[in-house]
Image (cartoon, rainbow, N blue to C red; front, side):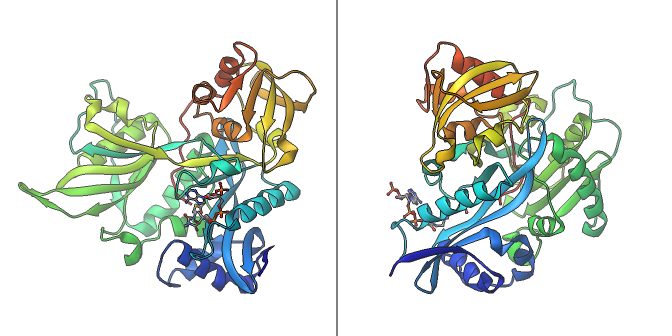
Length: 401
Ligand SMILES: CC(=O)SCCNC(=O)CCNC(=O)[C@H](O)C(C)(C)COP(=O)(O)OP(=O)(O)OC[C@H]1O[C@@H](n2cnc3c(N)ncnc32)[C@H](O)[C@@H]1OP(=O)(O)O
């Protein structure tokens, strides 16, 4: 039976759910229907069908992501899955092609971003590794360096109903200034901070710690050691509008009684390392977080700001989106980029995935050149380009979508 592909309708939702469950080896469970259903516009979800049976899916959810310079529309890609028994015969390849071509035709979001379940999947579709997260563990009581000012404002814990309006207002204030942060609708907040028993994984309910200029949300995993309680304080999110609030919130969390260790899936560039008197007390394991794909490179590259002036010709390859595969003159003046097709000799040869990797300002093009993803034709061109792309902060997306 030939495979066919189409975007879904509301009636397809239950089957879409089943495809995703089967793909992720989860048992059937629609208890989160009310949390998950509002996240999707089915017209932006592709399904692959074998006859009448849906065997694969890939969804786009339109949001805003902060890039160097501010928030811009992004196609967040999620719920990608192919049923076991239908794999390795091109279903995902077909879905990725249809999704990217659809995004190009719609002309809304100029780039796409995703978290990959396995890091080997998306490079072939032009996604580049743009950000990393740290699985960070900090010892309770870890001291700060002597110059740290935590201010005099108290951190207090309040019930969820009281906390939510405050943390939403703080998040909305901070997110546009933090590369990698996403806009959040009511439905996205509800999903992100879902706190039913099945979401807790054996930990406590969320606790909400508020500071006038920031907040922290955490759970506790109970444990006992030789000396008594040795709980793990599991941070969901620390968001601070200024440096004192950031230090005060970390100080608060590091000093919670009965806790042995703080654990936080945070950005790989989390500045907490530099707050510590002994940075070795921060034990970290880094892994890929955001993968970024430029849908229309000329529209995407002008949406962010750059660190330094540059004028180079890029020879870009793109196996999936032929409209990107061309020579482009990329010019930055005073932070703003201009991009146009040219026939000139290239200074730098690279795949669209390398531009996606560098897009948020966290992955250096010089590193990609050292790893042979980028080739230099004009001496010095990669260094100049790499510098222009650098961001002020390491990109970090505080939620897996
Ligand atoms: C954003 C997100 O939602 S991430 C979640 C992704 N989904 C999952 O991990 C759920 C479990 N896995 C699956 O559902 C499937 O294995 C998928 C979606 C990853 C791949 O689907 P398939 O239809 O088997 O992929 P398809 O046949 O199109 O393979 C395309 C290529 O990718 C390769 N590939 C696919 N999956 C993987 C993988 N997990 N690891 C390594 N290579 C892979 C294939 O070998 C193939 O390579 P080739 O073109 O050189 O032959």
